[in-house]
Amino acid sequence: MPTLQDKLAESLAVLKKLQDEGIVAIQTKNLSRTHRERLVKSGFIKEVMKGWYIPARPEESAGESTAWYTSFWSFCGDYLKSRFGNLWCLSPEQSLSIHSGNWNVPNQLLVRTPKGGNKPISLLHETSIMDVRLNLPDKNDMEIKENIRIMTLPIALISCAPGYYSNNPIDVRAALYMISDASEILHKLLEGGHSTVAGRLAAAFRNIGKNVIADNIIDAMRAAGYSITENDPFEEKPTIIFNEYQLSPYVNRIRMHWADMRGIVLKTFPQAPLLNQNADEYLKHVDDIYLTDAYHSLSIEGYRVSEGLIKRVRSGAWDPEANPKDKEYADALAARGYWQAFQAVKKSLTKILNKKSSGEVVRHDHSIWYRELFAPSVSAGLINASDLAGYRNQPVYIRKSMHVPPRYEAVRDLMPALFSLLNDEENPAVKAVLGHFFFVYIHPYVDGNGRMGRFLMNVMLASGAYPWTVIPLETRNDYMEALEQASVRKNIEPFSRFLAELVRKSITNIQQAK
Image 1 (cartoon, rainbow, N blue to C red):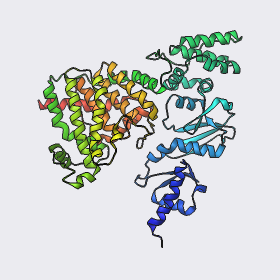
Image 2: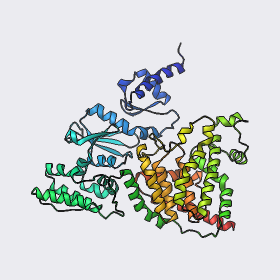
Image 3: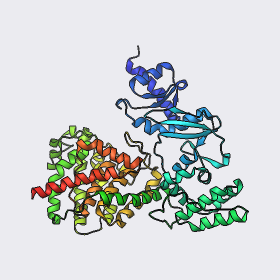
């Protein structure tokens, strides 16, 4: 007689077959009732709405959002195709967001379809789909990205509501920068007789410094007999203007966000303390704080480490060859990797304290920190050495976060752009806050991004004579919520204030110790 384990294995084999076929939105027709109930009870699938499920992980706690945010876009693509076939696409506004590289999970996904019901469909974690009954653009004016049907960039720009420009200026500007010549959009403006839209788009292109495109739109429309009035849909001028052509929209987005956010950091962060520490004194302080830093940084990531384990690692008593148990535990490997990475970071600190450019040091050294962070896992055979060569080559998702890190293809453009921003930035507080934020926003590695982001933050703090600052485990929820606000809402103020308060406490502690 088959055991319970045998029965579950049989159901898991059926689930694996569906996943191998690329199915994320699992319908009741895809699974027998027996398999479905068994998988739900065991936590391997969860219900999104009646008759629809997604894969899940049994270890996720009740109310955990990770499986849903990970599956959101694939589920929506499968679900909408099942309901409407090819007769649907996202709204022009949400099409623009995707063109600009913004794949964050929206609270409500707006969909156009001639079969729409004009009412929201509730999904998990307060998200929904709103299918609006509207005609679709011509089939040549739609395209598919990652199983999601969207309007092409020119049609999305022509069709989006005027208020979207002022409400989402960075998404729209990033999309506008993708247009390299007026011909990409002019024929659609002329074909539809869009004189008002042409005036709005011409003014929008002029707003971002693309005057040639603006002039060409105005001249062509007037030559066709249309009366055109420019009407800038943005509420203000951009803080920076790009002269480059065909830049990655991802790169343009972080450059614009950096320019917008740095002023908030300058207002919320304390002045450098001028503690008059020389390089040796600073490095001694860093050595003294290692035990605390390692415990809290690893614990924030979910590793179960004790001070005793960290002390063993620090003293060299950790020996996976002599003690096989050390080789088996991921926690021990993480602790050893943190120690090795910390030593590499100290070498970078020494360069910076000796007045080398912090941006250039981090550009060169961050890959060394990363290799050391996971070197013990390579030695233990848990990961391949090739996994440490360069940035990720696959999608990643952040637990419990609506933020979807940029596609891995964009990381190769984004990381050099981040280091250029760090190198060009003069204020060390801005480097520390925005350097940490954008590093984890980009998520260049499959694992270790939080630890790497905190290393980067502290190296940049050192460049401004701020003390090494520990983010305590007990503040984890506030820390993650502040990062979420910055990633999803583009509100950097909570994160800047959070770090500023910790830095103030570090300064006070050092002053009192003296």
